[in-house]
Length: 339
Image 1 (cartoon, rainbow, N blue to C red):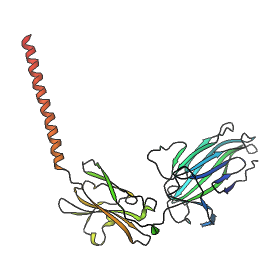
Image 2: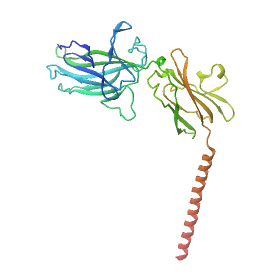
Image 3: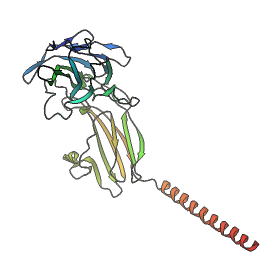
């Protein structure tokens, strides 16, 4: 029998899953790579059990450093595999069940290995809370989903000689609550900037972002992007069908729905409609009141001068080909006369 009475320990700077065979240590680090001391509060009642969270502010936590070790190996027992699973739920309600069957980010394996001859070197890897443009995800680097609830569960397998079969053993779970900034306690205006790319129809696609960082770490649901515009036939548009309420009932929706209209970044594609548009970014509080907003005017009407320029370039290329063909014919005829 394995002596494997698993336990969860919370220290000043770490959260640890362990038994006599394996140890999994979680530590939080800020953007200066300094250790963060997560806050452990009273247990939270979730469904039918009490959960001990370690709380980190989303604005402070850059990544979790996870170290997996097997301090007592080699052992007389034969170990076969180990894995670490994470479940995630985007929420500010810590009483929600991260393991719900309706949770799409439930039970994602972020580490798995086969153990041969009880050889298990210490495995450190990094779990970033947010994606980073300059960092690639790999075997020892994983990305999270921002604020919300994270549940990590470590388990391993071994051969029970008395039953001649593989037994799975769980060390249990640790829970982290990544807390967004309180939208009701933040004030400040915003400035919108954008870059431009081109669609398949050669219309402008706008990549908007909030220049200042005041609202970077609030729940994105409070940051809403919307559109009002008119095409070249004076038909009026809003972004989605859900926007066609009240005074906008007679407007046409550019898209049936638009999933990525919340947060500090927004991509506006007019879905082939040439027109002039106003792009709004509105910040709301928890009661639905407007805290601040900013608006930018843009156009997706094709630049006729650019169209003419392409026509001129094409005509020039055709002319060059014709001239080159004439010159080639003249040269060949001269060679024929010489012969």
